[in-house]
Structures are given as C-alpha cells and as structure tokens.
Length: 313
View: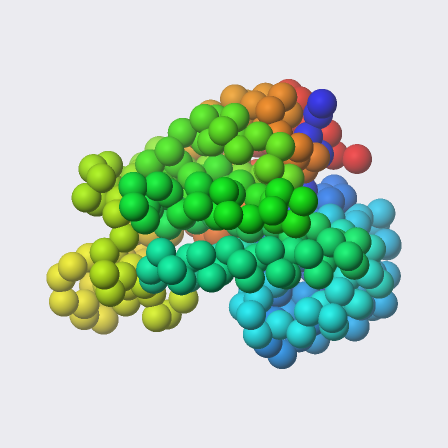
C-alpha cells in the first residue's frame, strides 16, 4: 500500500494567522491535496482556530481539489465537542486528533485514559475517529512502562487510535520503525518531519536509564506553560530570560525540511505501509530557517518526491 502525503496547517501557522483562506488556497495550489487542520484555540472556536465558518473554509479547500483528512483540536478538554463535530461534518472530515496530553501521576494517567475512551466513543457514534498524537514525553514511564503503552493498553482500540509522530518518537529515545511495528494497526496516521544533522541538541531528550525515564513526583509532563519541562527549559538550573532564549534557539535548530536531515524516512514509509493502518503520512514542520513557511513546505515536497511508496493525489 502506498501512503498519501498530507500537510498539517501548523506548518504554515504564521501564514494562517495572517490570511487563513488565502493560505489554504495556496497550499492547495502548491499540490498538497490532503490537509490536516490545526486548531489551538479550541476553547473559543470549534473550527480551524481562526474564526472561519465551515462553509467558507470548505470552499477554499475545494478550489484546488484539497480535502480535510484530519484536525488537531487543542485544548481538547475546553472544546465544545458537539460544535466541533458539526463543523467537521460540514468540511467532510472524519478524524479528530488530541495533539498532546499533560501527565502528572499514574492515577491521573488512568483517569485520562477513561476520558479518552469516553470522547472516543462519543466521536465514534458521530462517525469520527479519535486519535492521540505523541511527543517525546509519552516515552517516559510510570512503573517502568511508557505512558504510550499505558494509553494503548487502557483504551478501547475501537474508540482510540494513534497518530504516531516519528520525529518525537526518535527524540523520546525510541526507533520509529520499531514503534510503527509495535503499535501496528493502532496507528491510523503518521506525522513526519526531519532531524537536522547539525542540531545543537541531542537526539534523545528523555535520557536512557530507568531512573531518567521514570516520572518523578512533582513532574508535570506536557508542552503547556505549566509543564516542568517548559518551565525549566529542559534544565535543572535556574532559568533566566537569556537562558530561555538560548533554549528556544537550540530547540529550533533540530528541525529541518524533509530529506535534508538524518531520519531514515524511506524505512519509515515502507514500515508504515506494511505494518500499520495509516493511509496518510503528514508533513509537520514545527520550525524552519528558510525565508518563509511556504518555502519550507515547498522544499519538503521536493524532499518527499525522492522517496518511493508515496502518492499525492
């Protein structure tokens, strides 16, 4: 099976903030036909996060033959789920992704798994598939078992699937190919970026010993402003404004366009095709050093075209 190449609009979020309709039309004109929308304003907007009516955004996708294949909704607990469902029915989308969780204790994780099941069942009854998207933190452990394993084992496979991010899997100290094989048909979508060969950060952000990986009392795992990792900028040293700026500079240096870094993307494509239920491999470009985000997604399209086992239409 070949994978269809998609694009999450987070990759062009600055352009979306300036002109959401024009940006959607532009990515379609460039040749991205399978689009994952990205709403980081879900507490105020059930749609794509920029106050655009569903009919208007659908018309923008239709102009160049693009379609919505998934959407990220964050923060999910604050979203009006019935309104989100109604919006996505209008645009023709059948997948909803929780792009990140926040984890503090084992008991809290178990409660979240119950909530994932509840949301997944509700969405399933509405014809929408619910997926969880990982970062590196889900490869930290409670009681010696990764958070992602706990999620998979404590949620109903009929109601909760995975969108495996191979970049963050690698940065969690795992081999993406191994994780694609391990989670198999639980994986419904794949996120792909590339890791810069000249990154100022180490690949593994989690550490490698059981002591490194185990979540400590008082830790708040997640990417929100309250998380231990963000507040400490990945350090146990006192944080100054200068240190925080340097942390961001180093973090951004780890991202590069598809095919220009060190990830074995062909092996990821081959394994995802053979071992998972994923139909799409979706470009997510968190940061770029190129002049614009449009330049970045054009370069990544060129990079993707060097690989086999993918298609664009």
